[in-house]
Structure formats: C-alpha cells, structure tokens
Length: 63
Image 1: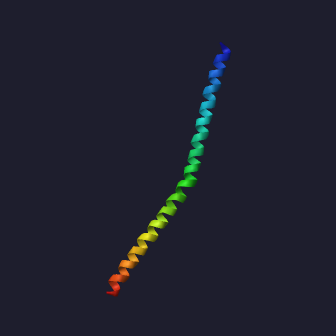
Image 2: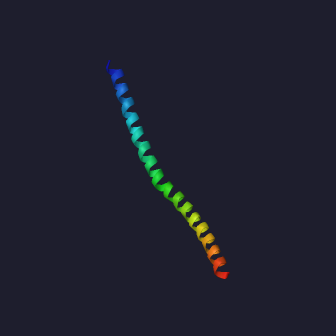
Image 3: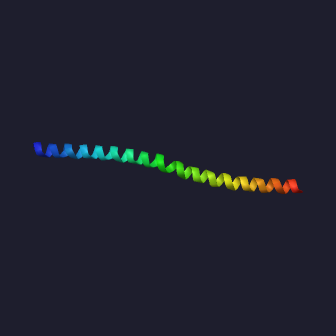
C-alpha cells in the first residue's frame, strides 16, 4: 500500500531529522557549556593551589 509506505518513509525521515537536530543541539550545548564549567573549575583549582603554595612558601621563607 502506498499510504503505509509513505507513512513509514515520513517516520524515518522525521526520525533522521530529529536525530540530526538533537546532535547539532547537543554539540552546540557542549561547546558552549563545557568550556565555562572547565574554566571555572580550573580557575578555582588554580586559585586554591596557588594560595596553598604561597602559604607554604611564605611559611618556609619566614622560618
């Protein structure tokens, strides 16, 4: 039957379009979201590490 064939074709077409859209959306989301998270994490880590390093250096230097 032509109608059911068209229906399955439309279904697969819509599925592929949705998959493509989801893939692009996820990629954009990751590219815009992950760097900010990584940047904040690295910033906080560097700040903590630097603070501890400065404290240890000052303590050793003062002694």
